[in-house]
Amino acid sequence: MEIRDFEANAPAVANILRTLGNERRLMILCKLVETGEMTVGALVEAVGLSQSALSQHLAKMRDDDIVSFRRNGQTLWYRVADPRIAQLIAELHRLFCRAMPAT
Image (cartoon, rainbow, N blue to C red):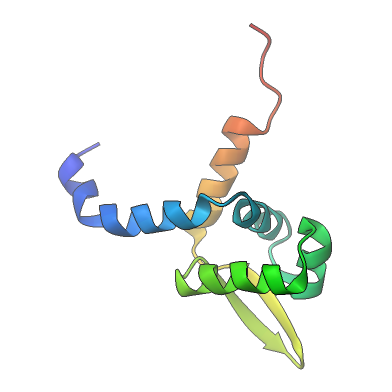
C-alpha cells in the first residue's frame, strides 16, 4: 500500500469511518447490504429503532453519500449508494461475525 495514494483520500475515508462508527448505522447498513433495498418501515422493524431515530441516521448517511433512496409513491426505498461501502460491510461481517476458530 502506498501511503501517498491513501493520503489524498484520508479525509473522506475518515469521515466515512466516523459515520460508520455508530453501531445503529452499522446495523442499518448490514440490513441494506443483506437485502439490497428496504423501506423505512421495514428498516424500523429490522433494526428496532423508532422511525424518528432511524430517519436521523438515514439523513446522516445520505449527507455522507453512504445511502441513497428512491421514491415509489409515498414509500421511500433505501439502498447502499456506494458499492465500496457494501464491500466494507461484507468484509467487516467476514472478519467479525462468522464463527471464529477455536484456539
